[in-house]
Amino acid sequence: MGCKCPHCVASREARMTVDYGPTVEEALREIAGKLEGQYGMSGKAVGLLLLQRDPEIMEELARRESAETVREIHLVIDRVENALDSPVPYYVALRRREAAAELAKRVASADAGGRSPAAWLGRILVHPILGLPALFAVIYFGLYQFVGVFGAGTLVDYLESNIFETIINPWVNQVVDALFPWYWVRELLAHEYGIITLGVRYAVAIIFPIVGTFFLVFSVIEDSGYLPRLALMVDRLFRAVGLNGRAVIPMTLGFGCDTMATMVTRTLETRRERILATLLLALAVPCSAQLGVIMGILSGTPGGLMVWAGTVTLVFLLVGYLTARLLPGRGPSFYMEVPPLRMPSLLNVWRKTYTRMQWYFREVLPLFILGSVFIWVGRITGIFTLLLTGLGQVVSALGLPEETAIAFLFGFFRRDYGAAGLFDLYQNGTLNPLQLVVSSVTLTLFIPCVAQFTMMAKERGWRTTLLITGFIFPFAFAVGWVLFKILGALGFGTT
Amino acid sequence: MSEKSLVELRVGLSGRIVRLETHDETLLRKLTALGLAPGEELTLLQKIPSYIIKVGYTEVALDRETAVSIILSCD
Image 1: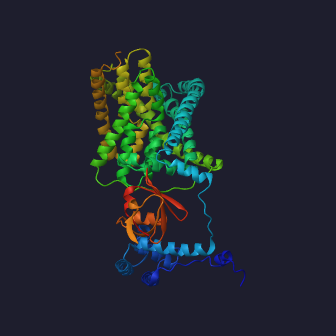
Image 2: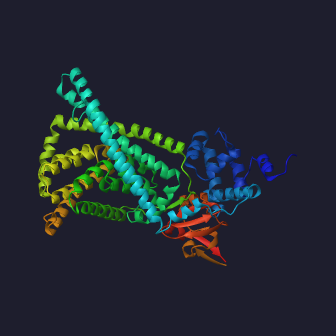
Image 3: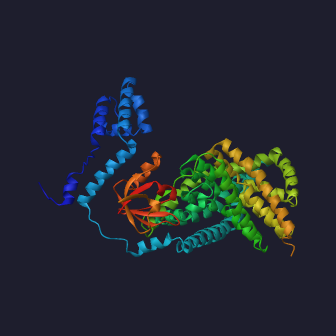
């Protein structure tokens, strides 16, 4: 009979069967006997899925069996549900666990564990106080220094000024001008707002390095086992705005690129959470392109950065809190496995980063190109001129010069462009400190870029997107106006 | 032997799961999949900022609302 050690016995008994108890076993035999169609698995397996009312197999059943058989099988399912005192899926899971535990007892031995340096570090990272320095270190070095300063600063500058502005763009402009005599065709493809010179450049020179560095850090956080720890550290904070620790993933991604983050809200469990996260990303999470320029503008204004950060955080919490109260349904439950800490494998990190970059380009690049086309249509039809006049009046009410309207409008098509437009106004002295703070806050709240807007429509549908946008536009200006009044009354920037 | 919910357990102590008191079927299934099934013994590792428990070789983080629904028997 061969070796009798538990390992060999277990491998001979590899076809493990689970005893589901008389009620279920009898029902399974009955169902298997009634099935006529082919399902690619045993009758027992089909029966188990049917008893758990698996929606996919239910559809298959309706397609492959006669109406009479379907009716009979439903009667069996009803009978089992009435006979058991817990839901069938739960009951099935329990029986399987028992069988697995029984098997494990025969073949596995346990060591005490829990005393290794990794286990010790794992405890520290989730400690309510000792865990905080680690949390800040990850955010500061991983996100701010590596993604913000290195990715969004050094790499973007290099690609933009050394590659696109000096080599690619002049060449594209020349070729397009030589090929097409028509002004509007040249403008569509090249020059300031063209598909290649703006859309592709934006995706490759600005987004690629930011998102690439971000995905790299993210994969390391994920692979080391820190991500669930991060989620459980911030669960309570997110609960205040109707989300839970799981939302830390799209929300942190938002500081890299809000468009991508909006797409990632797919991973949230309920529709309610997805709407809340989409709204907050659009309203109060500035992307890295914006963050860089706003920090540049406000660094020269004492207290400006504080007022900006304070206002945006307050809006995030307040709007999140109120919307969570307003939306029907309740907050999601939070449960997550906390895996042991591990040294991330370089190969894994590389593979994940690479796959995500591929996916990013496939999903987001077309949206940037669309953005260029929108600008082109806006200019060719004269809609922009009309919008600028209207927007000019709104910004005057916020105590801002009319030139800021251009920054706001174009900010919609290139989120950083709006901030860069403000930077120009700041450098030639058009804006005073008060106006800089008010316009930075308004611009941060005001606009998701056109790529994000399109992504919102794709993920949440037009109705929700228009509702969110319809709220954000007036709200952003209202906050700007209130801030202008309050700071003005306090004499901000006059000393 | 008395029954109490996980939120009433002191950090560092253990208890045996008696039942999961929730009507949310998805939650039931997910918790069971994580190893939180009746009969299993768990140890409460911490409560703040989130509940962390150890069941077998698995550590699971939970919010307070979920912890309330886990009923234990303790010596």
